Image (cartoon, rainbow over all chains, first blue to last red; front, side):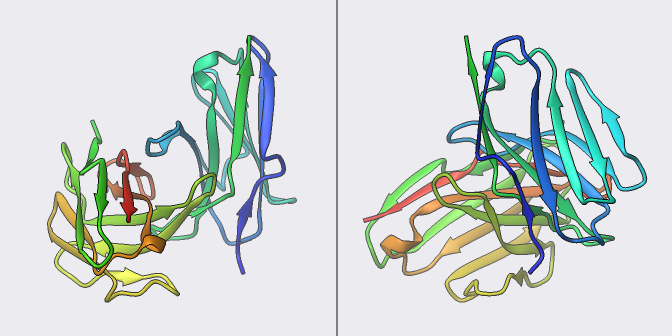
Amino acid sequence: GESVGLHLPTLSVQEGDNSIINCAYSNSASDYFIWYKQESGKGPQFIIDIRSNMDKRQGQRVTVLLNKTVKHLSLQIAATQPGDSAVYFCADSTGTASKLTFGTGTRLQVTL
Amino acid sequence: GAVVSQHPSRVICKSGTSVKIECRSLDFQATTMFWYRQFPKKSLMLMATSNEGSKATYEQGVEKDKFLINHASLTLSTLTVTSAHPEDSSFYICSARDWNRGRNEQFFGPGTRLTVL
């Protein structure tokens, strides 16, 4: 079946370093992608999104890169802070359908 | 803006009882809400899509008679876990779409942790 998955289950980075979280998706028809951050015991929090007609989008300290050729999505966090420690999920959707398919998640651990 | 609340945040119940979870969009109207289930250290699994004024659309493998969904207004959807059993223990999360903001962006509630004894 269609799925969105992540390469690394856990990523440990030092405070101040840049983080890169990767995601591979399988549905070639997906045209909208979102990154969510989930802290323990809380609901997912929107970070950044990108549509398939773009290959890069920047937010505050975050950048999402989309490579449709290899169906790969990444989230870059600049100057990672302890508050960035959480589980990060990528999700995708297709066309006018609202529903999102979530990846397996990557835990980001920020060390001091 | 775009705040979604859930109530209760935690519930513990005995096996065989029914539990109702509420999902509210506080500052926008949500014609579509979604219910997810999440097991520990796992991803979110979509259970059903709830549309205001119509029947919910359930994902494959989700029992509609077990998980009753009602979306009676533009700001409220409820999920009732009927005759709950220990295997229903999970973290239930709802989300809502704000059509005015964007095509597919969903805003999530804080989740409800259900423990069935």
